[in-house]
Amino acid sequence: GGQVLVGWPFLRSFPESYLRKAFELDRVFFFKWTVNFRFLGESLFVSKTWGKFLLLLHVLTLAIMTKKWTSQHKLKRSKESKFVKVNPGFIALVCYGSNFIGILYARTMHYQFYSWYHDSLPLLIWSTVPDKGFKGVKKGILLLGIIMGGIEYAFNVYPSTSFSSAVLQAVHFFLMWRLWKVGGVPE
Image: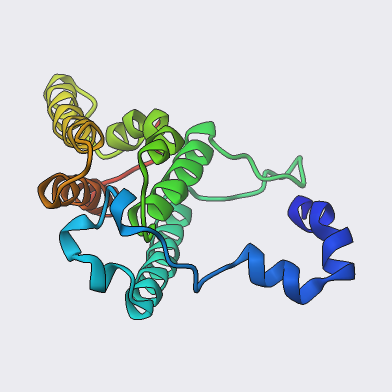
C-alpha cells in the first residue's frame, strides 16, 4: 500500500515509464564487479535466459518458503480481537528470509551488497538449529562459523575469483537448504 501511495504521482502521470524502470528486467550488469556468479563465465552471466531463470527460481523459492513459514506459524485470530497475534521471531524470519532469497538469486552482487544482509545471517542460521540444548548450540556455532566464514572469505577477495564466487554461492545454497529443510521460527 505504501509503495503505491509514494509512487502514485508517477504512476498517474507516466505509468508505463515508471513500471518499466521500476522492474528493469532486461538490464545487464558489468561482469567485472560480480561477486556471486563469476564462476559461470561472462557469456552465461550476461544472457537474458540466465536472468529469466534466476527470476523464476526467485519466485518459486519465495512461494515454497512462504508456504513453509505460514504452515509453521499458525496464524489464528483470538476470540477477543480481530487482529492476528504474530510472534516477533516469525516476522524477523520472514523478512530476513525473503531478503536472503533475493540475495541468493540476485543476478549480480557487488561488494556493498553484503551490508544488505549480513546482520540477518545469525538469526537465519540459528533458525536452522532445531535443538537449542548444548549439542544444538555447538552445532549452531559450527554452522555459524562455516557459513559466515565462507561469506566473509568471498567478500574479502578482491577482485572476486571463480573460486571465491563459488564458495559464496555454495554457502548461500547450503543456508537456503537448511532453512527449507529444518528452519523454524525463532523464539
